[in-house]
Each structure stands twice: as structure tokens, then as C-alpha cells.
Amino acid sequence: MNNTANFRKTAKALCAGILLLLFLWLLAARGLKLKRVLASSRTYQDSAAALEPADPARRAELAAYLDSLREYSSMSQSPDSPESGVSGESPESADTGPKIGAAALRELLREAGIRGERLRLGGGKEGNESAELTLRCETLNFFGFLLKLSGRGSCPVNYLSIRPVPGSPYSDIIMRFRYE
Image (tube, rainbow, N blue to C red; front, side):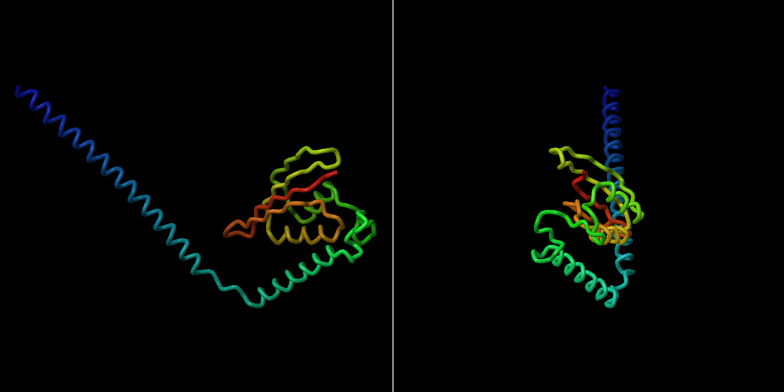
């Protein structure tokens, strides 16, 4: 009888010890996680405090550039402008060039120093095939590419998504276009 009582005491003590170790292990894991969260928060607060306020002259310059782009966009879409293509045909003059296809689009990207990460070709009716190009590039290079593209005539791009990568000069860009 004494042996069974000792065995039960030992088993109870062993179970209590295991549960105590498990509780301490979980408590330590939570404490380490909290420590990492606090360190990360401190890092983000320090980097936010180190940011300099935007230069008013640079903001004014960018606002003027945006206004010029809006003017150009409204000029090219107005019904009385000669390049709006009222008759449904794209102009073939030397200034605007012919309708841009996928090869010309690829060449413009190469000239801007932009490489595609993924190209997905989609089906469609004949003459209406589409493609989706995923890019990660410097945002300024991409806007330079868009400026060159807008000056070349009819643009095949019908969807554009630009998402900046936080803390870097790069953006993730998705572009869908029709190809010939």
C-alpha cells in the first residue's frame, strides 16, 4: 500500500512538473514574441522620425508636371483634336507613328532599362488577343517609359496598376495590353 501511495505522489509531482515546464515554455515564447514586436515597432518609429519633410519646391515641380500630363491627356482625348482618331483610324504621321504592337512595347521597355518578371498571354477572338506583363522596376524609369509610349500614337495598354514598394524606389506594376 505504501508503494502505490509513493507511486501516486511521484506521478502527481511529475505531471505537475511537466505542466509547469510547459506553462513556462509558453510564457517565454510569448515574451520573446512581444520583445520582437516592440523592437520592430521601435525600428519603424525611428525610421519615421528620420524622414525629412517633403521639399515644397519639389512638390510644386511635381504638381506642375502632373498638370502638364493632365493637359496632354485631355488634349489627346478631346473630340476636336486631330489626333483623337474620330474616323477610327490611327494617324500614320512621323510624329506619332503607327499603332503600337507588343514588339514595339517590348523595345520601349528595353530602352527604359525595364525587364518583365512575368508575361501571361491570354486567348481571345482573332485580332483581340491580350497579354499581362508583371514588372518590378524603378518608378521613375517606368514613368519615363510611359512618357515615350504616350508620344508614339495609339497605345495598346488598357489596364495599368502601380503599387509602390515601401522603403524603396521600386514599384510593382501590372500592365494589360492587346497584341497583334
